[in-house]
Length: 282
Ligand code: SAM
Image (cartoon, protein in one colour):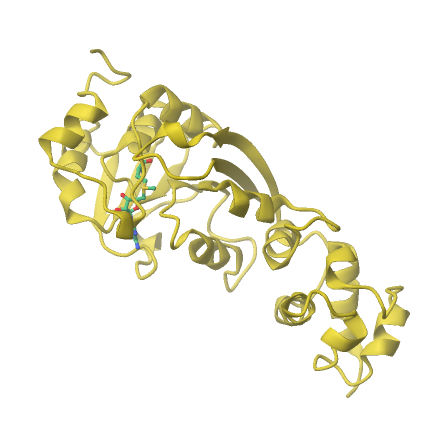
């Protein structure tokens, strides 16, 4: 069977290298190269960019990224069993694929890539949120990456793009939307993966804004949002009591009813509250 790149079909690669999926590594593989190319295209023009991919596995998405013209791909994979399969892809694309074996949570990829940098990955479900939060909270803004194109469980994707008043709205939505544009660009049924997970998945595309949508100190904003959503059923005057002794007056100052709950409050109001907290003497 012919493929997008003349390399063997992924099913054959998996059989030949005995890459039986391991649940503890969050392994659900995409075998359709037309689909992985489509995901690669949803990351925009890759031709002038270095791409960081977390968890290439047998290399379906890696091949999509390279076939769609990524300048270089840096792939970080924890499972050593996948390395021989990835080495075959590196041979087919000389100088364009570097593979690092290890834990993406512990590896600093920056020495291996040159801007502009895009991150594209079908993330292992058990570390997906932790990686995203790390990428969204760098020491400086703008971050080292231009965009993130990431596959999550659909329920996590919905939390990233959620708006006030919805059940999915919370810390992740505010964190993502404060300094990035976030949208769901693709929804995939369980059958798209081998083995098929129980749930649907979704690809989220996030583009870094040059500066935050509304000014606020990152630490204080995070503190206010965390306190508000840790007790999301409580009124803000109660859930934010620990944030500032005069919280009720500060809420009123920025036009938030002290009896409101965190899930009713939009990003702009949270930023205004964070600024008021920062400016108020204790
Ligand atoms: N990209 C492949 C695809 O789309 O078919 C595989 C995706 S699979 C959902 C997740 C991949 O992440 C697996 O290959 C797994 O071995 C790898 N992985 C799991 N934990 C990891 C970690 N901490 N660091 C790097 N890779 C990891």
